[in-house]
Amino acid sequence: MDYRQLGSSGLKVPVLSFGTGTFGGGGEMFKSWGASDVAQATSLVDVCLEAGLTMFDSADVYSQGKAEEILGQAVKGRRDQVLISTKSTFRMGKGPNDVGSSRYHLVRSVEASLKRLQTDVIDVYQLHGFDPLTPVEEVLQTFDVLVRAGKIRYIGCSNFSGWHLMKALAYSDNHGLPRYVVHQAYYSLLGRDYEWELMPLALDQKVSAAVWSPLGWGRLTGKLRRGQPMPETSRLHSQASRDNGPPVSDEHIYRVVDAIDAIAKETGKTVPQIAINWLLQRPTVATVIIGARNEEQLRQNLGAVGWHLTAEQIAALDAASDVTPAYPYWHQHNFAERNPPPV
Image (tube, rainbow, N blue to C red):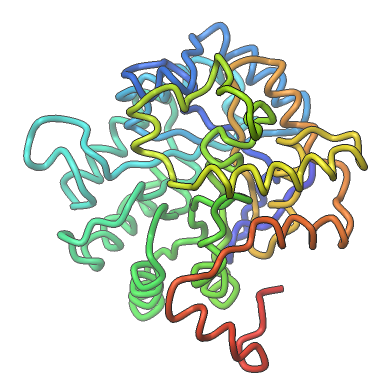
């Protein structure tokens, strides 16, 4: 397993991380992802550690805290061998302050996650989304207190717009506060919007990407193809999961899968392995978060590392997955001499 620097920090992370959204199976959406109990999760952690995958990502809303609890049990006795990242911002109770990124909610969320994870410190703590109702200065000053208290080591964010992230980075720089070193973002062959603004920002500001849903919300598993019925086991059977996932047309899916299938024949690799390997060769990507319902899926995803797509294969995938970007990005792309693509 290769390791990469996480943004401007001194922390190195494995190029593959394990996402624990499949732990617990609470509620319709998370049940459609998976429902690993402690024993199953412990076996998956065993496989990860054998392969050198040492980073595990969670969030308080994953099965309403159950995923963090199961992860805490699964790494018990070997906490020093793993990196733990988790997130908060979304609603975790019925009260008016049980949501958002206020000092009140962040401090309570960190304390609750530490308890569920059975640890004294969280290695990487991320905002799960942007909260426009809480001042940026309140958020970052709160993170400063939590870092100084030794409860979190590094901070990050997720699902931010470019101006959200840049405003926070500027405030951190101007006031000597902890800086976001990672942006957990959706990025896949079926959704390349990350490249339009967030990737150039990340290169300029040294903020790494931790990629969530690298298989396009379960659409690049290799089981979804033109003219074939949906596989029996898929998160796409869940209406709640479909409603919360990234939109993409069927024709775009099939065009990308056709291109991947052609490369699969050349390489002997699977559709998921090719999709993940493509991401690992993109600028700013430090780690790709993989998930798995079982050991077979996990081992297949682990096969995405240790080899490289050729330049010709990458070009073919780029062409098949390309879409016209939104304004002003399509306009900027017309002037490539002054707006070269990220490298």
